[in-house]
Image (cartoon, rainbow, N blue to C red; front, side, top):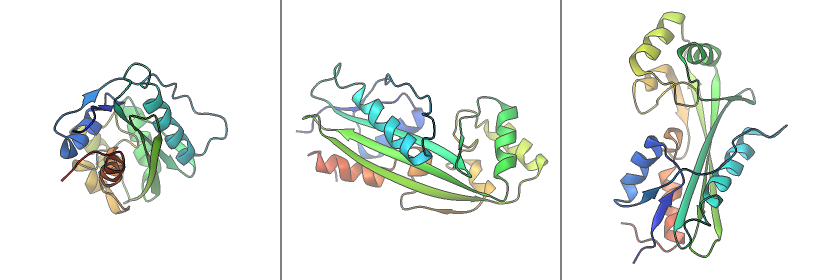
Length: 192
């Protein structure tokens, strides 16, 4: 019998991904201050936040297996946040044009004994040259305002790239399922 599994996220993207592995799990909003720490590297930030999100639910959900995840996008070592509005999305995509953006997707699984299991996936996305008209059409078509880096690779955003280098294609969407499956098996969860 598998333990009850809880996703420490209200992200619909992460929930859709996790449903590929698990038909039944809970979701809860983590209590995590996501303010960047001074001098914190993007990959370190992603891992700190994934662990913080998972740990924040332990007290209220004892006995559950808790999955936390966080993704940090960076260009030249500087954070690219969720844009929130079209102007910010346009600016992010213009800066990313013909450049490589790194996406650090961290995964933290707290097992029923409180032990932490972690994984970090780094995806390199090479953007093609993007002119203002292309950027405007893309933002209008897909409205990627709640996505780090201002695009959705699972949708039309894939047309913005020259290539993607990673070990797990689902990591770029926000939850590396290959690593998630491995960590869940390590925690005693039976998967196909």
